[in-house]
View 1 (spheres, helix red, strand yellow):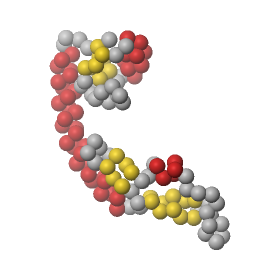
View 2 (view 1 turned 180 degrees about the vertical axis):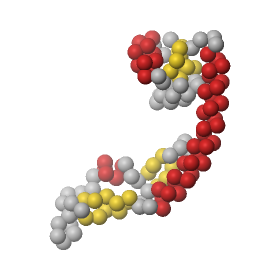
View 3 (view 1 turned 90 degrees about the horizontal axis):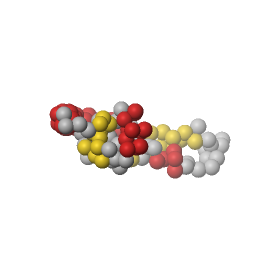
View 4 (view 1 turned 120 degrees about the vertical axis):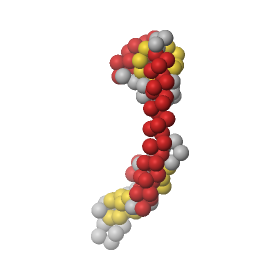
Length: 121
C-alpha cells in the first residue's frame, strides 16, 4: 500500500513522504490514527503543500527551540530525594530520575543540557 505521511512516524518517515507499507499496517494503524492518507495521483499536490508547510515550520521551530534552550539551561532542575535528619540519602538517585532531565533534544539541530541538583525532600 502506498501512503502519504501527514505526521512523523518513527522509523518510517517525515510528513509529506510517500512510502510503501504493508496493507494491514496502513489500513489498521496509520490511516485510522490520521498520520497518513492514501496515495493518489492527485495526492502529489498534497505532498507539495505538506512539504512546504514543514519547511516553513522548521525555521520557526528552530528559532523557538533556541529560545527554549536558553531558558532550560538557565534554570537547574531540582530532584527531591528522601533523606535522613543528617542529610544522608535513603537509597540513591536512580537513572530514571536523571534520564528525563539531563539532556533534552528540542529540535533536530538543537539540544539543551540541563543542570541537575539533588536536594533532600
